[in-house]
Length: 396
Image (cartoon, rainbow, N blue to C red; front, side):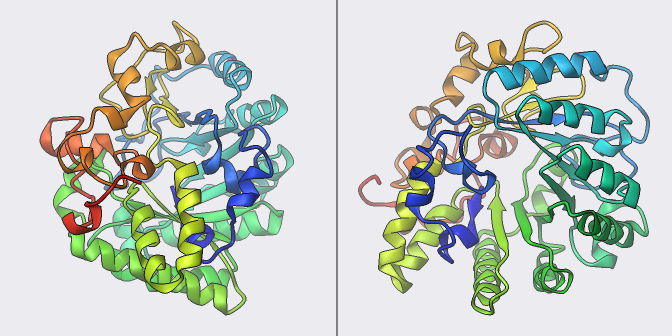
């Protein structure tokens, strides 16, 4: 996760994270990526059930309820364990998490245990009543997925009317006083929608957006050919940077992040090196704190059936099941070969990743994307758009 506004627009300084000694339990949400302990943010796919049919769904969500979902009691045991190991954030996802009736109860339980609870949703089920309930239980944030304006979004979501329903969900969250933001997965079919999405942020006064690079997982594995070319990825990142700066300079700052391609970090640094060398050095400090991709270390995932994964995209490999062993035990069990290697990916990556000068601040980028295209977990990530010239030189 790369904070475009934090880094490029200077809304965060290195001293901001140092003020809290970089401990995740003390850091505000917008600084968590700079924690020193890397206690994992955990994504819990609380259900596989969903009311939409998104073409790029990493979870292969279904319209029908799955019989093997963790029970309410299982969920509370999981939350107890996560709180005990110092997990700072529990992200409820799906499927569509609001399809599960006890989701608000479980989120409230997490808040009571001292964690920040957030939700990733398609937004179509957020009525005024639901929004108020989420506010009342202390939910920290609602991330609503939009992949373009009406025609494009509804095509991706597979259900006509999903765009307007999501906008209503955003409005209901705002009226209830709960922080809401957007999630946008970039691909060649919707990259042209980015300017309109920025316009929507401004018009609707939405404070935050995450632009996700496409990950080849779940139904998204069928979209490899629909990913942007490396050249077009650079153009898209530049567009996101430019529009973020425009809002910032107009006195309408938004929190803008890119997710799932840590080449974005060095790319911003190299751009700032040309434009503002002093800020570039501050950004380098922040990128070193961030450490790049943290699958299997700073982020983890629990599936609806209790299986534990390195992140929400890596469902083909389970480290164990929370019904048999606590998450904390599974997560720290280095006798599992892949888990051990993911804790220090930099020692195992191959090819241009192994000799890349940015390895320490990128972390080897997305291993699951490399595996999807080459069959080798440690091969170079094909979505890295940095040139050979840009990655050569002494290690940072």
